[in-house]
Image (cartoon, rainbow, N blue to C red; front, side, top):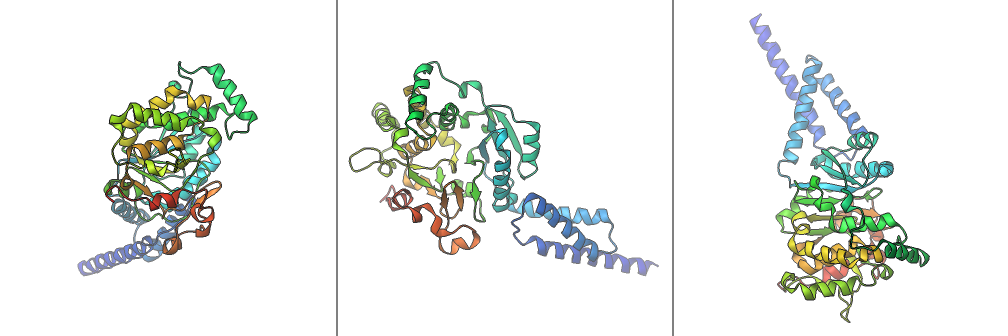
Length: 392
């Protein structure tokens, strides 16, 4: 009997090893599934274990699969940055946001499980929270924007602001007549990184509803930024609509004259300056950006935002957060500190950033649709690439 028990023990051990090998083989493949499809895949893997490990109890099978998955996740996420996705959104954006997050998870975050910070000027509904949690792998934080960050400061003349919105609406200045859009631009320019939920992080990746991710991202962009001393990363750069920023450049020039001690000798101002010393309207499209929160919280950038805020252009004109971020980046950083993610396929209507050559093999977007290829006169990206580095 002892020999039989020993033989059974050996057979049990061999069956377990074979079952684990089958599951481990499947786990090596990089599936691009939605959350529901991943659950189905996990069930399939359990069935494989069941058919192989005929003498193993169901509970043991589940524990084996779970342990292997945990090991794979631990290996993939053993080195992570102090980072989060940050998303300014509303309850009514749920459908488009879930679709975006499902893509982002499948393309990248299911392997890294970075957390999410969702911000709204109104409380999120319980339904919104539950449905968002069901499609993401990372921890979710839901925050309400403080009233003082989404309202008129006492130095803004609200009558003048209302008249300016009416005028911009009549002149068909894009989004100029929308009061909430002005508050959004101001908030994204100088307040999102001050929310208490962001205090624990050093890096952020901005995401918006209804954007698309067209390629597998098989590395960690946060760790890339951290390891290579980058402070700001973008996918698309274009030219701003001039009617939205009549005085932004002159206000920025005045700031630079009054704060010379904050301006480094080597920066990127030649990226945004035309041949006559004016603004060429180039800016990084900030609906996608991966950046250092230390930079956004810095004395230099904070002073710049506060100066702009006092000037009133967020309400009397329609200053966007994209040119504001971009002018701050080009004023205070050099080229080596800014990175174009040319290998990340990204779509925000109506523009694509799509990888070229071999990098496109992991994408479903077409490289000829990329903005710097399709419309070179509107894109500024190749101009950025052509700029010399700080040590040239």
